[in-house]
Length: 198
Image (tube, rainbow, N blue to C red; front, side, top):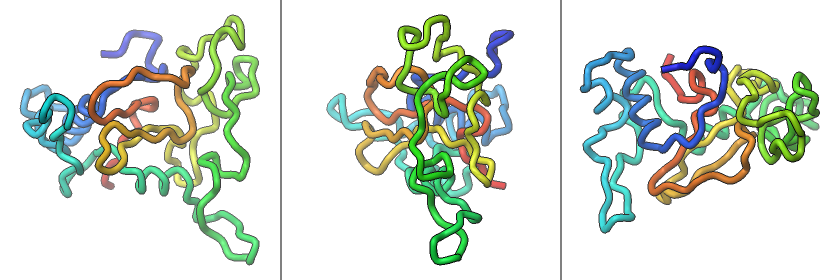
């Protein structure tokens, strides 16, 4: 449910399991049937723990999944790869150092529309910029897409260590986050964060 006036506010502290269930729901055309949440991209029956701390969750999405949580390699390609990047040898195409399509790092601060000079929403708070709250910066306030139109700020899961995450860009004002067991993902850009098959 979206609260009126908050349609473009980022969502944070979404666990990997919650994101997987959301991917299942999207895969099943947003059906309200209980079964639409239980399988599709990920099999929810695999979600569990051994000895209370080793997650048994399905490690990769089903091959037929229409929406899924990006793996690290997918996230890097989507956020750093540019088929039009000019290279020193005169060729085009490659990977930028930063996911903002340049060799310049992100600047964590409010966007220009809110009186700042930021290029990503991370590492600042209301103490740094009085009267501005990082949790109320609307999506789209920063230039966050690459030449392929994918968002440049997202969390993804990495490999076997399910407690690992990777931030690429920045989505929320707080650089710290609460740790939960299992994989984690921030759905900072709800409609375009998950990958989908075309």
